[in-house]
Image (cartoon, rainbow, N blue to C red; front, side, top):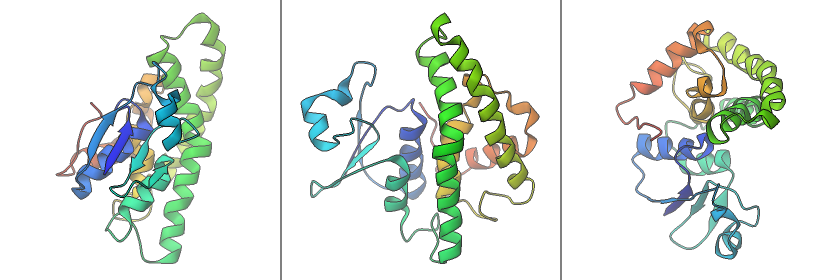
Length: 198
């Protein structure tokens, strides 16, 4: 299988981390979004939405959206759950990541890291801080109760939120005020099959 992605993107890194933890063989195809490589005719045939990550299976089928890819790849593994309620809790955190976390933390990071925090984006960058800290506080509260986001074992809920949380400082978020998140990041980093973002 092939994974099309930008290793510096948290959404793409999630897939890289999962494939490493589960030992899934794949070919990584680096895509430069700033060079508009996701907007080429060839890429748009694979994903009309023109976004990465994108998973292409051996038989030619494709799957987009990072959390959908995580669910597909983790199905039947220890990072997923056969219990319907536990699986719904995993999905709950993944929806939280896409709607309450990523739009603030990932966007602030993109403005700062990729765009160099231009004056024209300063107000938008500042506006992302409140929502980002609200999301981090939700995580901090949960991680004060459980070792991982859904109980005492690592799941794809953690992989989903780790992607952008562990680099949140690049978007101006000081993680030192979130001790439970810092401990959670350390636990994930100590996984024997852990792989760095780049």
